[in-house]
Length: 132
Image 1: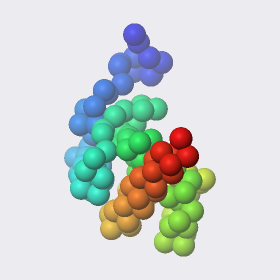
Image 2 (image 1 turned 180 degrees about the vertical axis):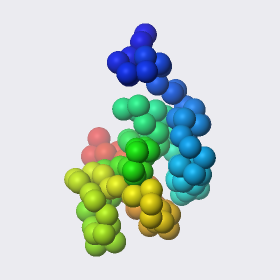
Image 3 (image 1 turned 135 degrees about the vertical axis):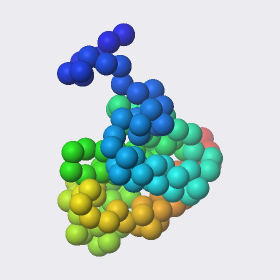
């Protein structure tokens, strides 16, 4: 099935294929984010959802994507809210933050956010089991 991309190509079906589309400097940043998530959430599975890299752990854990001028990181609204002060220097919305490509990517902050999301998803799953 074809998609509506202007290039009329199929979207990548793996995170590796997604990353390979970008210039090498952007690839390095995307791969570093991927590795951070893999290490912080070793039980998470990789997927492509909404045409972007996604890690799933009981639910969507985090997404990330590259754009012309930034890397978008999507740790859900709770991830943004929890780290609001540390993210204040970046453009953000309810569930997303933009890390400009012309600035140093805050990898240690990304790691903290991912660890928070891992804990949160396990707590939600545990809560559902005790209720159900």
